[in-house]
Amino acid sequence: MSLRLITILTTLWIGLHAQAERANRPNFVVIFTDDQGYGDLSCFGGKHVHTPRIDQMAKEGAKLTSFYVAAPVCTPSRAALMTGCYPTRIDMATGSKFGVLLSGDPKGLNPKEVTIAEVLKSVGYKTAIYGKWHLGDQPEFLPTRQGFDEFFGIPYSHDIHPFHPRQSHFQFPPLALLENETVTEMDPNADYLTKRITEHAVSFIERNKNEPFFLYVPHPIPHKPLHVAPPFMKGVAKEITEKLKLENGTVDYKTRDRLFRQAINEIDWSVGRILDTLKKHGLDDSTMVIFTSDNGPAIGSAGPLKGRKGSTFEGGMREATVIRWPGKIPAGKTNPELMTTMDLLPTFSKLAGAKLPNDRVIDGKDVWPVLTGKASTPHEAFFYHSRTNLNAVRSGNWKLHVNKGKPTQLYNLETDIGEKQNVLKANPDIVRRLQNHLKTFTNDISKNSRPAAFVKNAQPLSK
Ligand SMILES: [Ca+2]
Image 1 (cartoon, helix red, strand yellow):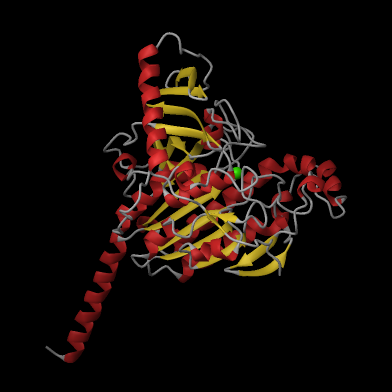
Image 2 (cartoon, rainbow, N blue to C red; image 1 turned 45 degrees about the vertical axis):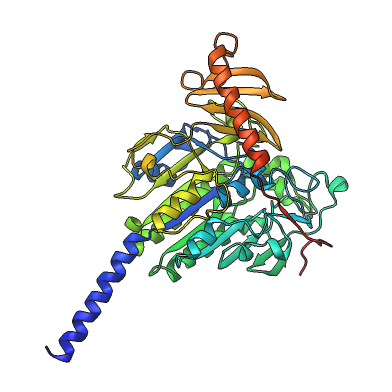
């Protein structure tokens, strides 16, 4: 055999081997919007929004109609997504003084927790987060200390800034924009955040197209105050644009609420940019993309669900979710099985061939067999918390609400998604069964929970 032939064959073998490796380790893209409701996508029935790209993604993939976050507000919901654990298990149900972490908060997600980014990094993934973190703004708590190679974005919600309507109460400092661990701007123009986050996401895919990656895009929008880039302001009533011009260094939250359709348009555009980039580089078949939100609506619509952001009724915690992986997840299906953001860590870990930490309890489950239609939900029960209060449990189609442990309402979610017909009195056996789930869970948390981390002399970030 000639040297040339050997070289050609070797190159071919390496190429095929790399391709096989690639197929074995899919890319993961998680697009996580902020305060978007169950009714805030066209494919989930929203008439007040227009989301052609996400609707197309649903046609090529699946709509998940019982997909939950583990808390109805930002910080605990994000802590659960990152770690696969209920917020109470990891002491992240609240910030140190408020329901979520604030600027210069001494508290953060414990660096000893193992995040999705760390699990995937352990098997060679490139990892990035572009958008809003909200799991601690002190240097010890930044995403770059939790397994992310790259970070561009803001440490917490963009309303934690000097223009907050209750500024005299909160006295928030200017909002920092970071690149990795460096503050590069203070009070960035929020009109351009979605656009800049999207540009980073596209660049990351292009730079890492030849190796497995995990891309996390937690958009700060449509959390109040709404902002969109100029191209998405086309067609907005003059009366609104004139008012926004008069902001004079403040932020007109109420007028900005009226940009909801535009804000969702821009998010839809952003999803389209990411999907187009995957397609352009031949990554469709090797990439799982999931679109969901961190909690129920503040401005938008929960569709048929009762409750909004902050509530443990369905509207606070059940999310309009779309997932797509051509050739792997059956296309055009609606999947009603109960799944949660906590399941992403074990599911990604399994698909990537990574090992889960075995020295701690992880609440999420591998839902790959559920996503492919081969199994029903692995969750016997799902628990709803507001702050540290355990308010409700769902098992099968039944949901029991409790007040300080005492049963108050029972709903059959299959026939009553809007939680309107309280059938508590007629179903004592079901109530007892669900109460047992609550008891078992409470006992388990009291035995198997882990502390958040605190730093001394916490300071707001500055340039
Ligand atoms: Ca939120």
